[in-house]
Length: 252
Image (tube, rainbow, N blue to C red):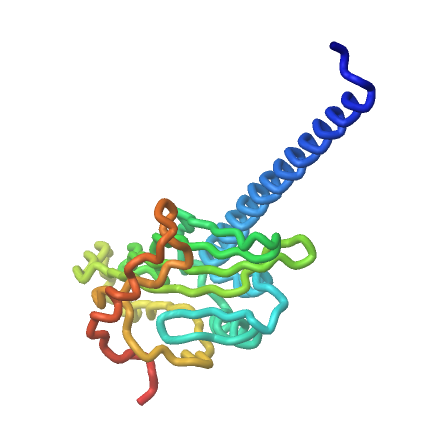
């Protein structure tokens, strides 16, 4: 039996509403994927600028917000003034300075409001500030980043950067001296080792109370719950049982 015009109109309206709902859901999914990719690009840009300590470019990655902060092993720098104070402390990086920290293994959690997000990253890399006997003298490092991001005017920016040093290792063996042809009439002094020109001492607004670096055992708190069970993870209970030493950076 043929359906009445009224019934067909109702069915058509229901189909249109269902398609409209599906379209809205897909638009949200596309927005989320675009946001995640934009956040990845932001974080990786930070790593590339860090390579040569491009302080102006790093500072410009941060949001225009009073909640901005940057936390390192010595403590937390508050606001854009604190971020500038930290990243502007090396005015001139010598040509041989490299600070390569790869931003890898991201877990990015969107806030659901389209403007807030958090992320956890591994950072692996090396620092080399000068040559020793004409050879690279690197320090290897592994870190954890816990980040908060804010979208302003459609652009994702860093709201909070928290950095935990897992370990840094520099080979203790003295590098061999490159052979040179001595000249009796010349005795020029060896060139002094050139270091990055840091123009300010450590000066966080809030000093760290404890040393959480390797091998303290400290687990930097995860911003996300267990992805399968949805439960809080056990790092807080584990950290509570540690006997952390006082921070070596905090003034006495």
